[in-house]
Amino acid sequence: MSIKIKRNSGIIASDRSLSVLANGKEKAKIANLETLQLNLKKYPAEVQVRSFDMQSNIIKVHTGEELEIKKSFQMPILFCVCILIILVGNILIDNMIIPPAIAFIIYMLAYKKVNTFKIVVTKTNEVIKEKEIRS
Image (cartoon, rainbow, N blue to C red; front, top):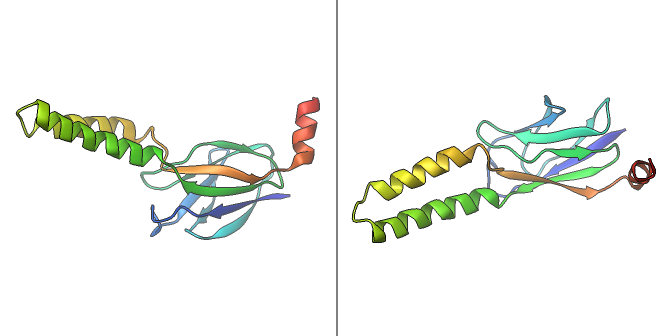
């Protein structure tokens, strides 16, 4: 059996393909607005997508499930927080260098921890889920 993965991440990284990782190993690449079937040998599997500098959450999937890759709102929130630090910092501190420097440091420290993409299950395999609940 396989899982179906659809990517609809909007404008974010629409110019590049994302690597689809299953259990930490690259299995395929997916472009924006593309759908692919991924055959895995072992289920449940942990699936994640990555690009050069962006990543998604790790999700546990079962055979027959359908996934969708969407944009995550963590990165825009981080960006807005940094802009807010710059604006408020420039008002409170009479220095044009310190607030942007603080915002840049926060952004760089948090960048690798923040998910740019979010993987969600759009269709589950109810038979597998019932077996897991019973055992």
